[in-house]
Length: 331
Ligand code: UFG
Image (tube, rainbow, N blue to C red):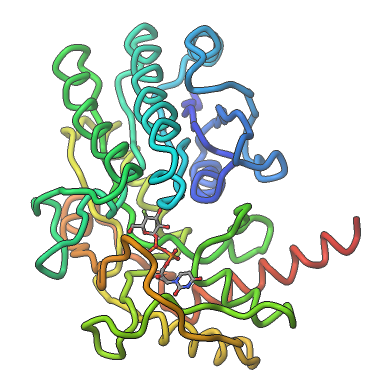
């Protein structure tokens, strides 16, 4: 019998790409999403059940109707700056919303969950690469709202036997190679889509947030991971929990860092066009470098990034943006 997975936030960026991977692996998918930041046209691989994480009745209805084997929980707000200005929004939606979801799971007897955590839970790490056992000390409410959930998950396992895999993403980037889904944020704040905006839009100029960091070229270093590699990690985590695996936590990154300037140069190389840019002040809360140790996910889940070469990340992102422009023009 086909097994059902309930995917919260399946209309969002990483959620929609993961649904594609789940569908290809034969899962039946129900997307639970309130479309506040997700996109109806990204729900291409399963049924959309519109609902809010804070709505306990609606959640119970979904669990009763679909009886999912497992939950993959993407739904969350994810703007660091917004979380500093409006912490309540983040603790309510990300933390309390997950509590509601876990209560509905406990009630329905669904006992497996994969949770989208973040490297933002590490704060400003003192050692690189970052391993899962390093100290977690978030420097913004977004990271803290996710760290709280990591703790809550442990308590729900003790009380209700819900096993969890926590996946700490580094910098998700790229798009589905077929160009059907990709990175669409409103507003867009992420580096690679903004570099592409610079290539495609004559009036846009990228601001590089600081070139005086203690890094090889003075700009910040991040670990960019292709969204389809992230999707594959979720699939492997589903199989892992389904096979009786114990609750665990994994970094999802490549182990390689790329600087902001290196990304700019790569976008110019891949697209063959200049990225207009200027150097601006540092953005508050940006750690100089964040690079994952991806050793544990490889060892335990058998997961290895295969699409995360920076040029491939940028090429797929660029393809998506070109198609998106075409879709907008056709409207
Ligand atoms: N950057 C610029 N100019 C821009 C946008 C970004 O120079 O206009 C730089 C940033 O300063 C940073 C790098 O490009 O050094 C990457 O920035 P992104 O905004 O693309 O990504 P972040 O590393 O800030 O954020 C990611 C996730 C967050 C998560 C965070 C953890 O998107 O959800 O990692 O630190 F919280």
